[in-house]
Length: 140
Image 1 (spheres, rainbow, N blue to C red):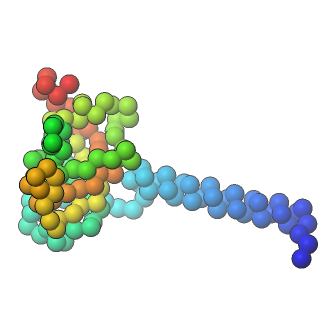
Image 2 (spheres, rainbow, N blue to C red):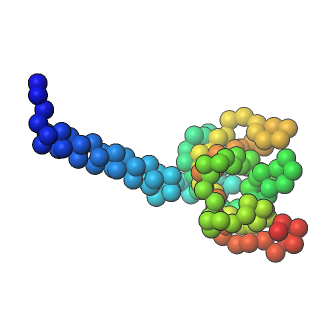
């Protein structure tokens, strides 16, 4: 079967539109505007841990980042990866220590996590946003 240049051009346009569409879907997913986050509190997680296992959640609390520590409210281990979005953009990661933050990510509630496996919950952070900076001079 012989394809004309017009047919090849139309196929090229269709493939380009699909690729651009997939790019925007991925970009929206990574920016947390695609899909929904279940807003939860530490108490809700503790009261019904199995309900939140594997669920994408939004959690607000105090973030601690020190030697062998990465937690929210000293109860939930936070895994930060190179793919984690930090907000405001360009903020040095050290500025997140002792700050009130919003963490969005997948919650894990079956097991022991973090340093010495001492945390009952773990969130794989997709994004961390500073809501209020710490006044602690040691965290700067």
